[in-house]
Image (cartoon, rainbow over all chains, first blue to last red; front, top):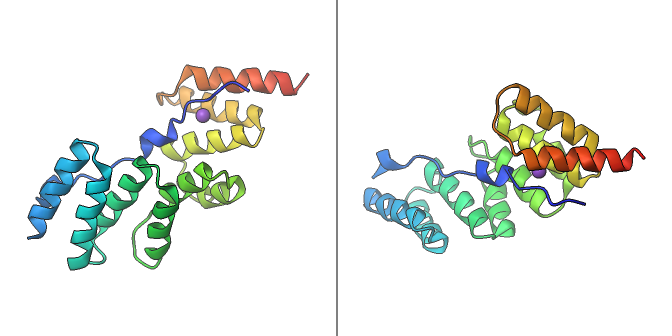
Length: 21
Length: 147
Ligand SMILES: [K+]
């Protein structure tokens, strides 16, 4: 089976915390 | 102060030092146990650090809070190859690009390459950036299984 890129991984992103600093 | 902890958290995320980022998030949570940003940062940092079991534990212990970690949970289950559970976790969610991308990957691993290809084609039609290589892989795989 061809390897398929884990594109969902790129959707796991940090929240914007600039306003908490 | 909590602002300093978030500043440190931000720096460590920037440096991809996820172990330290988790420690910063934990310090925030020791002051403010239900802080959504800290919980989200901790879950994401654990996933980026390949600590999928730990990420799931945090998600599980946050289940009674009004924080939607359903996508992250489904992704962790997918990484653990618990494909049925991952799929169930996505059911009922908004069909946004991230949900569709993960659904396609689950279908692919389940050997349902044709359904996977359908999802990628749907994403491409709606102008969502996806990887040609994934679509091609699913089409090739679907072609093989139909022979
Ligand atoms: K994929």
